[in-house]
Amino acid sequence: MRGFVAVAGAGTVTGAADRLGLAPASVSEQVRRLEDSLGVALFERTPQGMRLTEPGATLLARAQALLDHAEEVRRVVTGRRRRVRIGALEMLAAVKLPAVIRRLSERCPDLDVDVRALTRQDLLAEVTRGGLDAALLVDSGPAIGGLGFVPPPGLDFADVDEVRLFLVAAPGGDRDPLLVSAPGCSIRLAADQVFGAEVPRRELTSLATAREWTRQGLGRALLPDFVTEADLASGALVPLDLDAPVLAVRLVWQRGRESALRDVLYAMSV
Amino acid sequence: MRGFVAVAGAGTVTGAADRLGLAPASVSEQVRRLEDSLGVALFERTPQGMRLTEPGATLLARAQALLDHAEEVRRVVTGRRRRVRIGALEMLAAVKLPAVIRRLSERCPDLDVDVRALTRQDLLAEVTRGGLDAALLVDSGPAIGGLGFVPPPGLDFADVDEVRLFLVAAPGGDRDPLLVSAPGCSIRLAADQVFGAEVPRRELTSLATAREWTRQGLGRALLPDFVTEADLASGALVPLDLDAPVLAVRLVWQRGRESALRDVLYAMSV
DNA sequence: GGGGGCGTTCGGGAAAACCGTATGCTGCTT
DNA sequence: AAGCAGCATACGGTTTTCCCGAACGCCCCC
Image 1 (cartoon, each protein chain N blue to C red):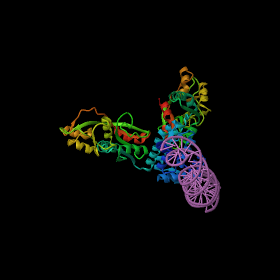
Image 2: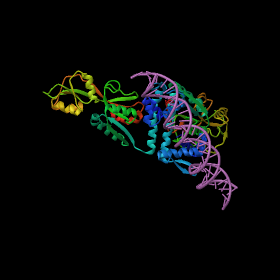
Image 3: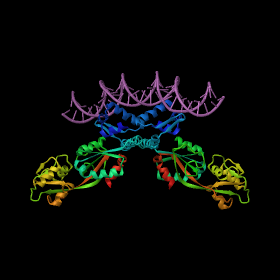
Image 4: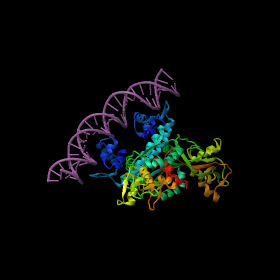
């Protein structure tokens, strides 16, 4: 069963065997045995790897929940505490997570929450691999990856908040260049989408640096609301006219694992 | 896992081994292995058998649901139809079940329903053994077995309807003896509770016979509403004064298996 | 005090899980 | 065109699991 899930996740028997710490031959046999037991072909064998058949996809969606169910029963009987591992972008971990964690600890005192700050693509990779139960990131559009780094399928999401972007500059400061953070940063991806490649820009190491440079009048920057709020109110920064997109704060998890994340989803959506 | 459930159900390793078609040694090893794996004692070993510990009871309540979940996944992936096995007392199968079956087939066209008519004690035994998913019987009181044949614990129930009892006789016919059906019949058990052992009685083979004899003036009988309705309306039988108890039409199932019976419970409670 | 119920331990045999290797396949590279 | 890399899988071996029958210790009751 776990072998099947690993193969479906990795797309290849070899990759699944690596994750499970088994030999490829063993994993292959596990899958064959499961298919024999069910009397249904779960994968289509291609030279590039294993692709799920339609019944295979049906099983995958339910297998996650079944494994979670079994693990939950083990946990309750042994009396161990629950533990969820949440990842988030650094800036979201700092700004958005504390309220969620507080709600979770109030509602579920028996729940331990691990938080890790990772980059956008590491978050999606870890959720896919199962190293994280859920990840909080910034995205746009009707599907995961509107801002880039589209992950392999099998992930589901819910938008729990939104982030408004403001194009800002210091009053009397320079308008150019466009100050952007490092590639891979979600806000940087949004800036790339809004301005294209033709605008003069200077790449900095982080969003905090971009904000600081902007305040010192070294250019303009596209910054999220929670970073610019204070400066806009005090007049340290002024908004420039721009129809900037509204981004979503998006919680991402493996499809079918909702039951294990019920409390997290609830705490997020309040 | 199934070994554990069987032992919990049978109360003894030997009995569980019989049900599973295994040697007692094998079942004993299964339980020991599960306990090792969980790091928790699931049973208290007594000279009379195995009694669940508190974590064991916790597991049992969830194990049923987990096994049902696994079976449900198998069923969905293989595309087989759902199947529930319902047992009922003969008289209830005839009178109360048709409406339920019709509602079930309308709401769940993918559901096959098997119906078996059994005696009161066979119903409870089969549900406990797992040979039936649920049973419909007549009972009274706040727990299963108010009418007798208290089963081993682990069953849960819901009252879905009620049955009123009338003490009836033919107009101008004899009042004595009390005509009762065979021992084991639920209505007979109710009659025993109401009248005690001191009343002159004649034992007949079935409820239908008791009704017929009563109509022919050979005595009085305690009969359920759905049997006497027509005769009372037509005057073929008249009610005698008696504060007869109201019995419950009771659906009984193994505790923890509610998820597998969701649709049945719903069709019953409408 | 012995018989019958119980669960467990023991040794052995069958089955399953897993491994390392070898093989056939495809797509890409040289 | 030949070779190589990546893939899934068939094969033979070893380790672990599963199951059995028999034997043992325990308790209760006759």
